[in-house]
Image (cartoon, rainbow, N blue to C red; front, side):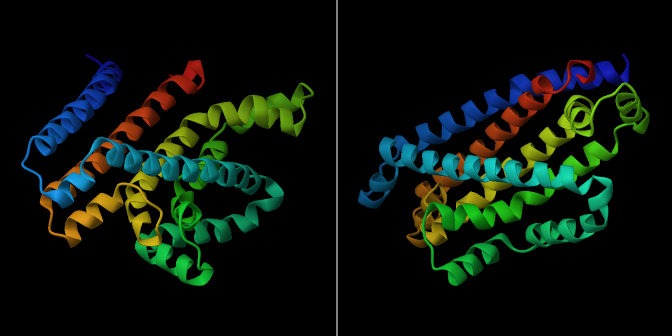
Length: 250
């Protein structure tokens, strides 16, 4: 069996195994939590409406961050690969690297102290800064790896620079851009648990409550749901990479 066939089989197995594992994990933990003899505080935090609200808030933060990252990083990555803007590329990559290298809780708290904001945007903006690098770097690498002969051929048949970008460069760079978006989304899901410190909601509220009040059931439920959500969005990113890229590269 060739390496390509083995890789394809492993990818297919992951496509089916990962969501099944998430469903089994969440079902097992929720069954364990709801069948325990909960006290008043635990019942207040472990019930259907509270859990659904926490998951929804977490998803909103994560997907708003990912949308902002794509809107900012993809156009910026395109610009920085143009000949006239390449000298500025190290500056922007350095700024994005600082964002990801900095402690996420530090970025959140610093933004809160500087802005005085609370809620969704107080969490979204610093997490966006934290998550920029994978999409920015992958956009640049994806465009830079396009064979220059293909670009020259496009220009040779009369295509404009924009047409070459839209019809040749971007389609070939899509797999790497999607991989960067998947990484950013997983980062956003993880860091979104810290949104509780700026009154942003999410599953971090359960984790923080369980820790501060020594309620292990609440802590474990929040933590497992956050892990399951990260695994689920990672799986969705894998599906997007597989089916949204150019057919010839799948």
